[in-house]
Amino acid sequence: MATSIADQVPIAEGLFTWPSNDPRLIGSKCSNCGVVTFPAQSSCPACSSTETENIELERRGTLWTYTIQCFLPNRPPYEGPETAEDFRPFGVGYVELPDQTRVQTRIKCADVEKLRVGMEMELVVEKYIEKDGKDVVAYFFQPVEELE
Image (cartoon, rainbow, N blue to C red; front, side, top):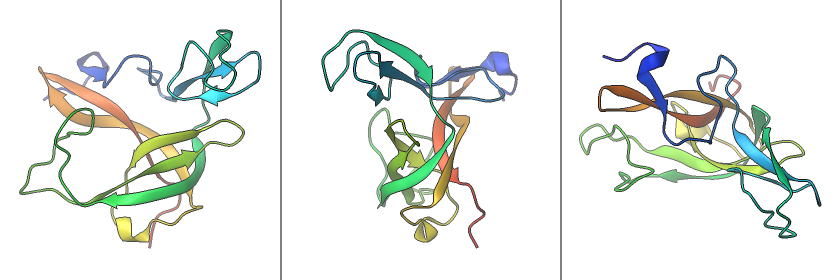
């Protein structure tokens, strides 16, 4: 079982800082109009400028909207460790990062029925699947407060 940082790889290069004790999503900011995007882009979707710079995004934001996925994902990038036998519904939504952008994310939460628009969310990076003897790590957002 892979456990050391050397045995961990990100699900995709350039999405978040890794390895890191304080992982951050990597977005881009347009030098011309200030629009922030995630994932990072080489041109601005708002003004078409190619003057963008990569920035580290905030770790906390608010749940802007969400849905509960009640079926097993069947293709990348959403397929994960679940099987038909152990699948549990999970949240998928957008987290709004203050003064930056909205990020689409899988929501890590023990009880998806307790998710609410507006709740404070926090970035976590952790093992998602194991592939080729390595732990593949991905980003998720989870509620900051313990759900009761």
